[in-house]
Structures are given as C-alpha cells and as structure tokens.
Length: 217
Image (tube, rainbow, N blue to C red; front, side, top):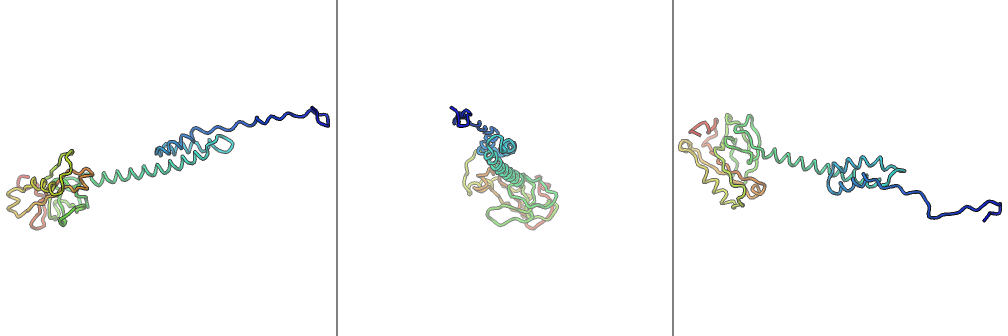
C-alpha cells in the first residue's frame, strides 16, 4: 500500500510501548519495616530509597516517603520508651546507706541506714526527704524485709502486718524512747515488682547520728 505521494504507508503496532519502570525494592522494604515498627531501619531505608525513586528512575517514591515518615515516628516512639525506662530505673535505684547530701527520693529507694528528715503522715508514702545521718532527722531505716518474688499479693493488711512483725527495736532503742514504724508495699507498687518492706525507728525528738552505730546494730 502506498500513499498518494507514492510513499509506503507505515505500519502501526498498538501493543508496543516503553517498558514501565520497576518499583524500587528498597522503597518497598522501607514501608514494610515502618509498618512493622522497626523505626530506625525504616528511616534509613526510606532515606536511601528517596534518591533512587526520583522522577525518571525507579517507581516507589510514595513508598519511600511513607517509610521515612513511619521510620521517624518509630524513632520518636523508641526514644520516648527509652526515656521512660531510664527514668523508671533511676527513680527506683537504691540509695547509698548514708547519702552525702539531702535528696528527695521515692520510698522504694530507701535502704537500711537511710535517714529521713521528717516522717510523713500515715497512708501511702511516695517521696520523702533523705538526709545525711549527721544532719538532724526524725527517723532512720534500721531493717528491711523482702517478700518472695513469686508470692501473690497478700492484701494490704497482711503485707503491713508481715513487715511490722519483722520490725523489732533493740532494748537500748526502746529505752531511748524510739518507736517503730513499718512501711509495706502497696498493691500498686507490688504490681510493678516492689517486694520490699522497711522498718523505721522514729526518734522521740529529731537528732543526729546513725542508729546503726548504737546498740550493736
């Protein structure tokens, strides 16, 4: 077949065309790891995939961007969890037996020898002021009691009674007018792993010095 000008007519093949670009595997991996909560991995893969999926190159630009976003959110979540874990560890780390300077501490951080500036009111105890025993204080932890790790929650009354039963003052301390106060775990602290009870000797009047150096303790 020829055209009026005498040139052959070109053939037309509708099934032919440019080969479509492949989807970038790194971009796919960025999205998948982001959905799995692997924040740092997704963020790195997404950043690597961005230049690989520029216009005219491989497909998957949206996947790479999604991986970067999910990765960034995952990194922030991991950072928050780490901060909470570190804060919790610091808030429950036992104090030295005698602190070098006054410090506000949680009750679960007290150990045998800790001197308390002022005994708080009856009821749940959270934070107390711990001072060097050479400073004026109103009470001191003289013994500690530890419940078994696998023991189920015994109830507040029984927990308090158990610690109180192990809270004995020496004859010399009783003659000086000291009396004992027992601190037991609460149901809430027990659920978070607290298994320690404390026996505090309360001085008749605020004073200085450690009771552990007196009466054979």
